[in-house]
View: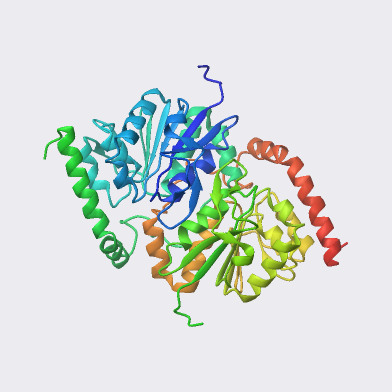
Length: 233
Length: 233
């Protein structure tokens, strides 16, 4: 394929996704000149985000073409995917052929369950960061981690930054700057509370407590996967 | 209604929306404790975003309850809405009863067409900013402009900042900080190209040229609305 052919971009969608893990990068990547950006899922029924937003997939996994850019979002529904061999095999096949793989948030855990994180530098949402070694990854505490063709964005909104990095990497700084201008992406968060290091301690403690049950499930799944992959305790 | 009752939040959706104008604030507001956040449109058929993402409305405009928070996204499809008296009347009614109205991007132009910007301080996407006086508004060049219960977020991704501001305003700083932490919203844009003032001059010129046709249409519509409202020269 020519380096100049339009990019074929695909996002994985699933029930229980955190929608902005998908829609943040979509906003960036769907603006790439000549690119097609489509949504793929197990079926073409609408997927329901963790807070209820419904997004319509464009096609099933089986009907996806070979992707130049594979985008793997996260969200609590990632737990079920980690036991879904159809999805895991799709990720193995598509990532092998892709020129870039963009993981957002706990999408990294799904890639881990597919055995795709072994020996890779990676990141994920701060609340799952400690699980990365279970998949054989080196956990790197940065908002965006690039390891060859693999781009890992940390939690949720980090997908926007990761996608802009990908855009610049594939098509040059000017393209990425143009997209950033179109999106008016000059963020002004009203607080400095976006990371465990900067959030008020009480806010962090409450967030950890609210997520405790989901975190425990993710830890159990990570241990199961580690055993399956033969990665030791 | 008690100040402590769960908030009823609704976003307007339409064909040709810029999806992150909707999904950015959804990510914030759907996390408000006890809130319901639903999507309303002319019909319950999926709406298609300007780049092809399809989102399923939860109900029609007629079936929307009285909203505590009315959210009005933008995108090129806003042009058609500005001539749609059913939508405009819905916005007048809902905004009259709402405790907050959040406008994102060119959603402000739709509010303008409904006659709701008269005498208000407002903002919108940088490429439509000059049109605000056509609707009787005072154009204020800030990322987020608050005028009483009205919150105007500038272009596209500014909706995230506007929604966090709304969250803090209604439910307190701690709630907003907790949401920011959950969303890992500690942005690190790879370039400083998110505003006309900071983007490279050549990038800005190209963006203006690419949008010229849409801008001309928006200017014509704004003039028509101004005449209808009896505003201006």
